Length: 84
Picture 1: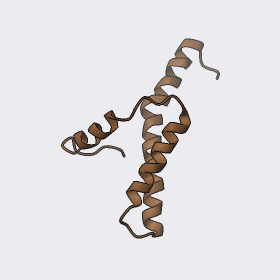
Picture 2 (picture 1 turned 90 degrees about the vertical axis):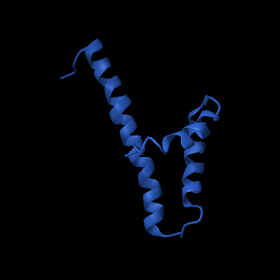
Picture 3 (picture 1 turned 30 degrees about the horizontal axis):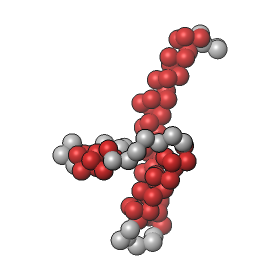
Picture 4 (picture 1 turned 30 degrees about the vertical axis):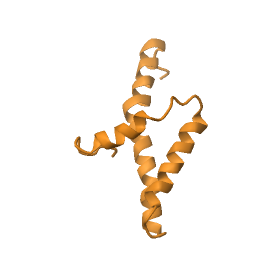
């Protein structure tokens, strides 16, 4: 999960706050890809590390879905009625 101790968050938030507003999905994908490469720096090119890198992004995406996308679907269901 993308939850880290509150004491560690400011160092990352400071960097993220300097990223300009993204207008296109490709910009987000670029940043995520570059962060994945950054995570790999200084580590062995091993399956377990590559796997951890990919799954960190998958887990973050899953958490985003749970927190935001699922809630938005619930709102649309309330507004438009259930299809079942």
